[in-house]
Length: 474
Image: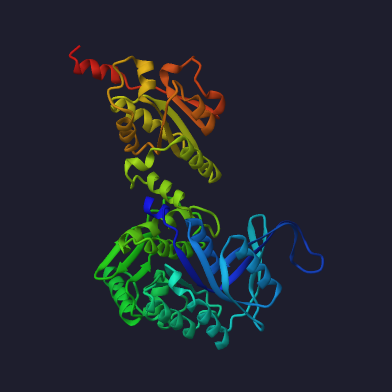
């Protein structure tokens, strides 16, 4: 993840751009003019849609993004161009075609329910003149791109001539072209580095009913051979991602909760392009894309994902090293802010945890049961010495933090220098503050910053002091 955070790829997205337009309101009556609902509009929002959602995902990951597409000479085209400008997307390769309508999909939402959608768009193929303008425009600086994404929403921008022209130009400069395909005929993408069809799309394109490992391999091989791909790839929804370069490899999904799969395909191709641009191999890339998809399907609506969110998600699955779970004050504040925004319940506890024992583990397991994310404040070595005496700690703070971070119940460990975690609790403002049962009837530091206090009884006979005494033969 550190390599990805230190890399800013320059990625070109070519495809069908559109505006997703939402009218939000309430409905309390039926029209006297016709048997239809009357919606009182209270809010109006717009977001980039189609290939624009791929752009949003790349920007969220930290990429530099350029776009090439065809829009109309209309108010929607001006609005779309302005939306791209506001997020610092290079749109000098954007072509205006006078007889074309810029895609805008308007949805009326009442009481969280979509009751109507109306579209303004052109679906016919762009003209040969527009194709030539795009190819001429991108050929001038194509060598500056680390990868090119063709995002096909079937609205006519990605014609056979344009796809083949882009792939030919890219091959000349050894640039990978990644395609999110549309339809049942993938021949127009021939020569691309890889495609990202889902299972249903792959079945339609290959006429192979993918229902077991053998049929999956057959479909992957057929796509690789007929479309002349470097790597064949099929996304398998809850079963993850399957790839074929020299053999079939499957990468299982890592989604914990699925709220909405809208835009998950855009997240997958964006994360694949980002990872491959950073020099990651296909195994590392598929795993990264699975993590990104795991985050985004846990959000409502077409969503994006950041590298920090992916790192935190990986940590929550305990697929990362212990180091990834040890955070500074600044890091944990950012994590807490994002987690609360996503509706996660934060639990906090603290201690010295000098010699880790079963009492500690059971205590932390019960603490985690009170919420979604358990943050453990850990006393520094100097703090432990002041509290426990000059012979303590037995284990240094780095060792104690690493062992705590390896526990499944612990999401994050934050070392602190003070005698108490007052400032840490104030900053986190946890939903639940957890302390040992020996604090019953006593004042607990930081209680005023937490929504609730939970006391957890210790396991009888289990403590660091008793462990030390046993070692010393006392």
